[in-house]
Image (cartoon, rainbow, N blue to C red):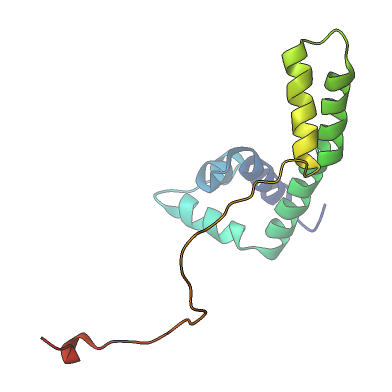
Length: 130
């Protein structure tokens, strides 16, 4: 269990779910009075084992629940090729695929003069001429 005790694991899981350390601390089963929950929750978030668990769990959740670009492009391709889909949805899907493949490159032209010199310096305001 990554060297965490039950309460630490609960705390980390609740923290991943809510993003609120104090609430997670209390929901995990710890007891505290005054601002002790806030202080102790902050301390737990600096614990190397807890941090490692949170990082690993977040990475696992990303793989399980967050679509990567390949999955996203496959989804857009399915919509683009679906003859039963609305034409505007098919066109939008094809646009997204084209954009992710770099088909639309925006060019901007800047006009103005530049002599190639960059001057760094400090001007002491107390020595400025009046």
